[in-house]
Image (tube, rainbow, N blue to C red):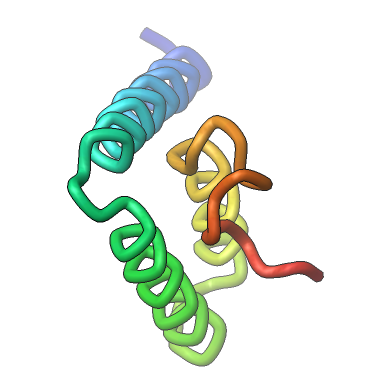
Length: 88
């Protein structure tokens, strides 16, 4: 297997894992007894992680990957939920 093929396989593995994680998270949100409280907690965790990534020693690429992953694991309709990436 070439290095390019290995990279493509790693990207495919990561994409599949992100989709599976997103599916599981959405199912948990939908079935949680207090989804609004859960979504508020998720939003707080998002904000705290964003601060850590922005101010920490992580490369810029990690922040970009965080945003992409967040988009993949969030609810199907972010406008209908009280969490999601903050504007800007």
